[in-house]
Image (cartoon, rainbow, N blue to C red; front, side, top):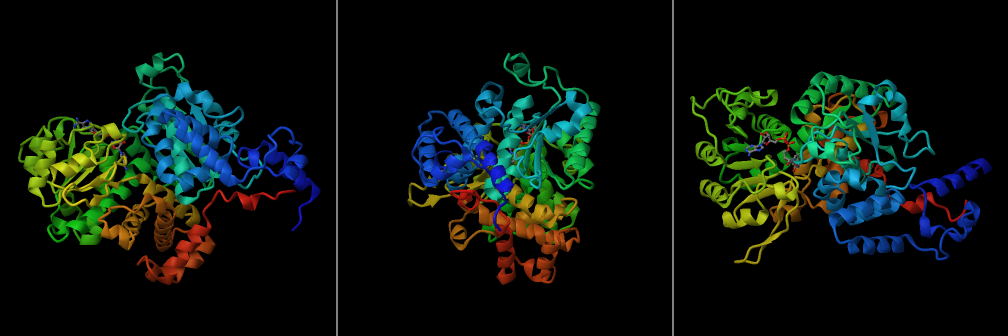
Length: 591
Ligand code: NAD
């Protein structure tokens, strides 16, 4: 249908103004005339390919990762499509620069680099401080990354209060790098439309003395207040967000553990939300564990695994809960028996009922009662007592899985499962190389941050470390939920996302003993994760999207097997609903 004159004028205005629509140096000459920007750009008209080539050369010429982070932020905030083309096509190179590990440094430096991340008028995310309480609704509406189309309202918000950023502690508003980065991964991983993402950082003060003394710190200069203040502010924010955007999916991120569990408990049954640190991590590590169990099956029957968590915070408890589901659903164990396969260690040692300190709520459920009054403090003591088949690190204590510890595990098991999952890299409990060397190449390994491959000196065989990267789960989980439109995210949906990821490996990946698929296949993997989530939502009777219900309902039993033509059809439907940078389809050479 041809456009009316008014529509054409509007498009022209938008293209000139929008960091989303603008084509910069590839704007056609005829369009430049119509936009009255001839002379404001250099004369050459470039292809999109050449723009990308230049951007990559400039990026690679930067000498530090933080400079690369700043460069990429500027690119995103001036030319959205070019940025996402880089991110999507060069995912393995760019992801570490926009998220872990670089985002850790970027958050620590956030108040120093903030003015250099975006041009005036472009805003990276929404800051909501305690002072904004009386006016939350209007302030939420202020954030509008794409004012040209009213139908493109936010679909996903990632919210943090900056109180536990990665393994770096309380960074206050400097934590904004996390929701901003995470939403970029939603776009790259599952094709969420970048115009429909809403990064939010809440400012309830910070207990970080360094920040409070820093003249450039950009948050409120006060300490964090009481739990009562925290929860009533959160209530107001969640309530107002739901009023303004009733269909919004809220993802809680990097809250301190106690608050994270409490928030999830409070909202999971009445709000369209999930917590990636707890549930997303739970799912991605469960998925790697499912494949590790498969690899060790001939030596250890699944029900005989003994799993030791070093670190007992949000991530460890989230994973432990998912493992419980796994042993119950796949191996018919009772909850009580499954729980006996898991041990947790925190700063005070093995978590037991009679240790003598008051356990945080989230640890009580897993506290051991069968220790017969004995307490175990050091990791070595705990390992000697538990004799684990799997050691999972979530402690942010870099290098704590020493050669001695790793060798101990190798003596106990033919193929020890060792997952040092803390981030960033220098917080990892051990490296892939250390684990390979200490176990005579027998380790089954996954880490939080990506380690290089390892070549066995004796055979020349290249070994691939697994990366328990939450990016394998949350984009697909989010997309599946947005398409099927349940009102809540259930444990079963999360569980299905994990099993779909585990079964998404190709024959080649299986032959290389990989625990996770190649990250370069992320869009296909996300489509499979999303499809499994959709099937589960329909099965639970929670789906509200008629098209999705019609597509899935009649083939439910077949679709649950994740294969066959029906499954491929559903995966294709999901892929067709992914946003892409495909700039050409939005731009005529003239209007
Ligand atoms: P958290 O602060 O909630 O928990 C940390 C836990 O480690 C606490 O239980 C603490 O008691 C324990 N701990 C600290 N020092 C210890 C010591 N010396 N000995 C024993 N226990 C000790 O943090 P979290 O959200 O659970 O995250 C933990 C780590 O896991 C972080 O580094 C985070 O980046 C990483 N993480 C990785 C992934 C992933 O790889 N997919 C996902 C989430 C979190």
